[in-house]
Picture 1 (tube, rainbow, N blue to C red):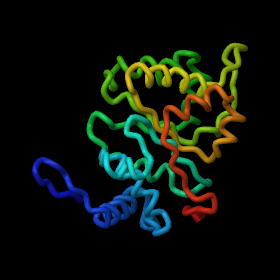
Picture 2: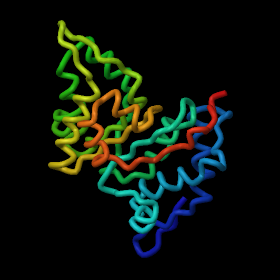
Picture 3: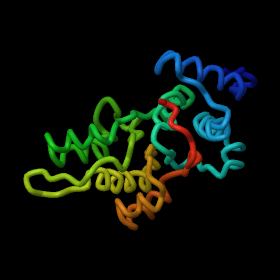
Length: 214
């Protein structure tokens, strides 16, 4: 995928596309394809992942922010966030965690779960302050839930706590969601939406992008 010249890796975008499709078929089945209409979006994600300062600047992306990947159901958000992980340096690796699974954990364990994915992620194994980045998958499918009578919007609390770590330590968070910006604000409020603007680069599939699982 890349040639090493003067201690710098030079990536070939066409070769990366071939690799992504081959890896996608291995992970998700022979039906997986990289579609031409997604090449521009994939390019954005790849230059961000490899830390290409020149091209991220051209794409209006900040390497100091995480990725907020939006798009219709089935357009390939989770698959792409899985496939581009190997392009990130070791210290930028992230754990993909389903928001649905986090809400199930909260129902069983309560408020400890909020700390697990925010403050405790930076000091406990396997993260130990290094691989403390998460990609929260499918933000917006969860509902506020109760634990011993106390109602809580779990993901809102986790993201607010991670915002504090982002400001203090530059810790990154990534998100996939089917929701548009206005829908996120309706669900989580203007306070969190404002902080999300600071935390994330918005990378969006076309709203008419087809369901690739069909």
